[in-house]
Image 1 (cartoon, rainbow, N blue to C red):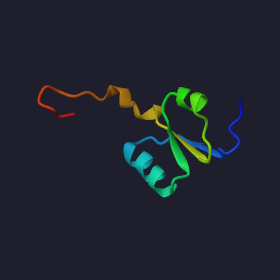
Image 2: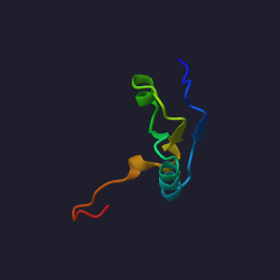
Image 3: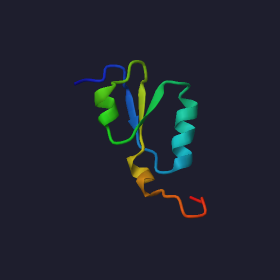
Image 4: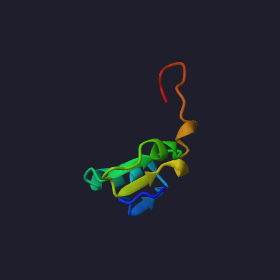
Length: 68
């Protein structure tokens, strides 16, 4: 399976960097978190995939008082 529209895959090392990438892309980027979403719904027009795997977002949890 090819992704003809995708010209770049970036892997930010911080959440701030990831947010800046998506904001600067002007709608031409999409989050990549695991990859199965790209297989099920390939990018139609997005040219950049932002790989969130280095951010360890699965480690986020909510404490009893509602603070993350």
